[in-house]
Image (cartoon, rainbow, N blue to C red; front, side, top):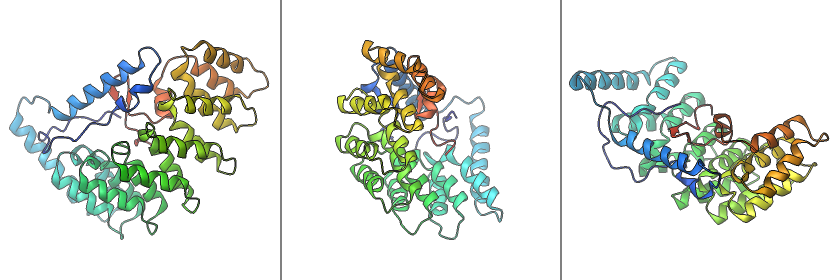
Length: 323
């Protein structure tokens, strides 16, 4: 999904930062990938900060403002599906409109509201998490044991924009990941989101601890592996992934994730040899062999979405779209 620039107004406040694939840039050793991600970050930043030129600016502004008003009104509709659709459509206003942001925050924090509606409101607030009030609210929802697990999970995921920039967010994610008392959905969401904080040593250790614990659920370990994709330039992350990739006792889905991580290292002759050997191994499953073959190639949209990246070939792709 491409996030369009808001046609209503110029941004009401300067963005503290723009989370883009620049988070991954230090790890992108594969030729051409770093440039593509950095270019994507720059173009996305420009799109956010520069409203499009309007031929009939006054009329366009009026229409857009009317649309925002209508969507906010629909948040109070009696039909939950309508409320959810309105909350989803308000994502294009949440970053730059105080009214839309407040309305979505009220909906997200309403204990009487049903979970599917709250989830859409929270997803629409993801980029507005760069604002302290929204960040605090999403973090409060994510860490509230009284809240529905699915709502908490999407609140954690919607903090990906600030996960690598705010120590409190990173700490909360690591705590949720490591706490066996937490619901599985919440722990997996924490693992999912920590890709944005993979440059932090504590985060990498927490993810590796999950990967090394055979008692943990396979789905949790897979999410932990995915979040180390951007850290493959770190020797400890590469060793961890190689151990999993070469171990035929590793669960199939986990081994697939580990192999795909080597896409960022496939210019290394030893890595290419390993991937080639696994791709020809008749004792390995088709899923594992296919992952090895894909890792020998280039970054595709499919793989970018698999690792829930935010950019592909210079364009923003919403990692929350199918969450």
